[in-house]
Amino acid sequence: MKKFLLPIMVILVILIIIIAILLLVLLKGNDTIIIPKEETGHIDFTQVDKLTSRNEYYAIKQVLNKYYNAIHYLDANIEELDVAIDITSEEQKQNIIQQYTAQGIKILQDIIDEEAIQELSLNEENLVQKLKQNKSSNFTIEDIYYVKKSANINLYYVIGLLDEETQVELIVKTDSYTDTFSVYPQEYIKSKQYDKNSIENNFNIDKIQYITKNNNNHYEIYEITDKIMAQYYLYDYADIVKNNLEKAYQLLNEKYKEKRFPTYDAYVTF
Image (cartoon, rainbow, N blue to C red; front, side, top):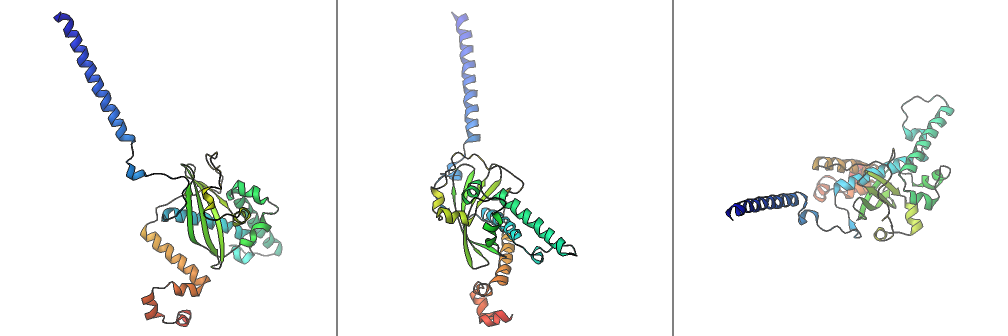
């Protein structure tokens, strides 16, 4: 009897050890894949929120700067293009303008969302006529609202100003899997009669897994440090000084303004 008990006990001990090892492996595996709840939180794929991330803010700003730069090419004169060669003839000037116009058309075709292209019937022939009225020397963002539509797709509703006076509203869609974006122009927003709350329910992108990448629709999100943020503030203020001196005066710190420029005329003279 003892001869049979010994092997059985050995087998039981081995089984206990194997079970213990398996439990340790499983527990260790859980430790590596479970993300603490306070770090992830609940992801709401329908809630529209005001954007507070400055990293995302400046990514969207760069996207729309590219959009408006392309529009600028649609109706630019030779002086605005700042060409770095000597132009010797009218024919040469027109050729350069045509090249920039073609470049602007190509960029816009690559970055305007396909849904908007179809809705507005945009093609190479009419794109210039339909979008060149949005040409401006300065675009500033006033507010951005966003909604996370899926794990990789975000929609940003942007309210901004052209040349510090004309309000525009656009939508930017981003895909974090492919680092790509597309733009819905203000003409599309008007056509659909959308506002910032419309991105919650009126964009059926459940079947969209990613945005197709091309040569012009790549974007990146960089970490915006305090130093970089201060530089952006200075650049933005310089643009305001150039385009809206009264607003630039209003943005001055009140105590500094009282001491240094007690009147608007004093600021203008400076």
